[in-house]
Image: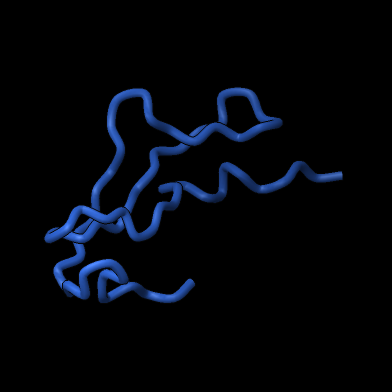
Length: 65
């Protein structure tokens, strides 16, 4: 995945990282109790959420055959 160093909306280079809090978590579709927090790259000037990803992607690996 390409590193984001500039906001596509306003051109700012002030990109921060945030984490959704509370009950905001991604849950694996076929795995009970497999979830991860969601982190996002956010423009500190206009507020655009540029990219979102899970904190623990290994929890979403497909089941083995």
